[in-house]
Amino acid sequence: MTGIQLKGVTKRYGETEVITGLDLHIHEGEFLVFLGPSGCGKSTLLRMIAGLEGVGEGQISIGGREVTHLPPARRDVAMVFQHYALYRT
Image 1: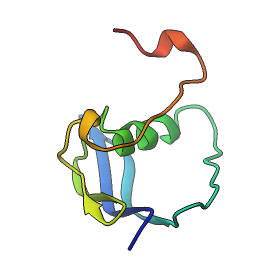
Image 2: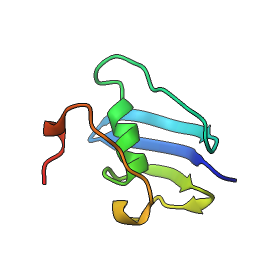
Image 3: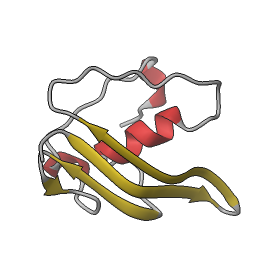
Image 4: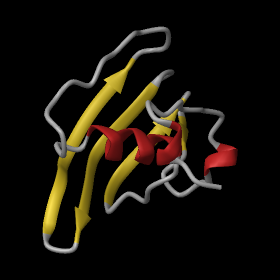
């Protein structure tokens, strides 16, 4: 299966669960928008897909390859932040 697939992805910050058991399949070439209020987990989700944020539970696959525990440089994805100050080197 190509594209990006998330199976049962969960993310917690302490006792607060910000993403709960998310299952999502984004087909190759598909255009998708995450829309929601501030603090609902949109950026956290994108950061987990890119490998900038760890996954608490579940699995992420990109292009049919499981990448859940791979570092960002080995995922062959990129993301552009809305505001450059969100990413510090």
